[in-house]
Length: 131
Image (tube, rainbow, N blue to C red; front, side):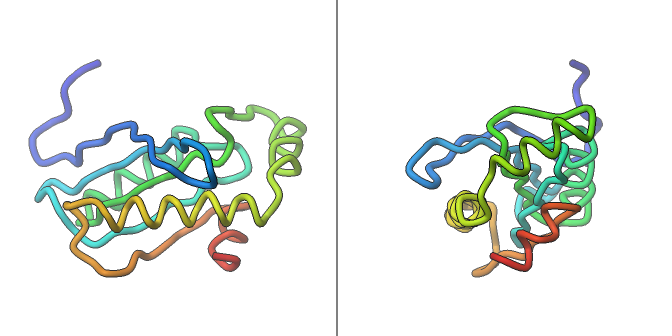
């Protein structure tokens, strides 16, 4: 993998406790190293390249952005698979996983805010309303 250019957000895979398990996600930090927190909630496809790109763009804009992986590493490439994964994730479980992501992000020293924002796409938009 090529190094990222100077001034580009840094992205890392992270783990954190959530919903009585270990959750995973992608954390992107702004070039300044710190900023207000924002949770980026995936589409029904899973934590794919598009969501990673949105997370990077928010970091470039100055946010500490975390995209939690609600599907445990699974990514769908066709709508039937995406539907199955979405249906297998009950809304209360998804909200519980996202609550752990919020707690994790707020505990990071790079996060300068006392609360976090959230943005969601597709199924993630529904979770933004439920969270």
